[in-house]
Amino acid sequence: MSALRIGVVADTHGLLRPEALAFLEGCDRILHAGDIGRPEVLDALRTLAPVTAIRGNVDTAAWASALPETVRIRLGDVDVLMLHDLKTLPGDPAAEGVRVVVSGHSHVPRCGMRDGVLHLNPGSAGPRRFRLPVAIGELRIDGARVAAGIVDLLDGRRIA
Image (cartoon, rainbow, N blue to C red; front, side):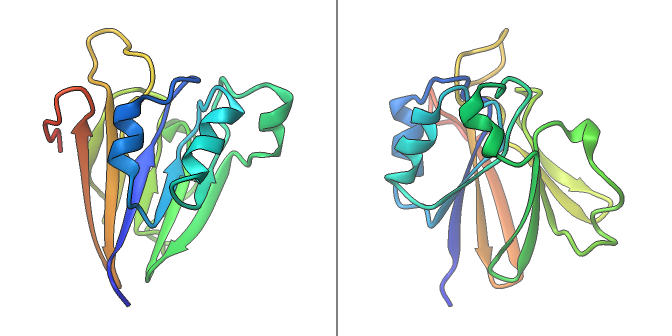
């Protein structure tokens, strides 16, 4: 099996930038960690790759009610848990076999290990908030190996 490239996006708040679409081109799957804003965002992402999306705190319209608040998905040999707000993380992900936790909500891009689990918050790919970067993430999964990164969409600089 070849390595998977998984695009990770969050907090679009109804704005899907052309830079985000360009970054996600060629992904095997796209994960949206909530605060989608409009169903058209998911429609556009689905033209690029299969999408797994969860509901964020601003996704209160009727169309979003079908989206789950959390999802556990297996990508390659890696279990990934998606939730919007990291403060709602249930239990001990490592003890439950989760290798990666994907979240959003804070708009702050972060990537790092915590208690043996990779945590990835791609930041916000939508409207800029304060002086935070407009960012997007990716996971590279090759069997059980995982690598992650975050890129500033506006200048192409690697953040993490």
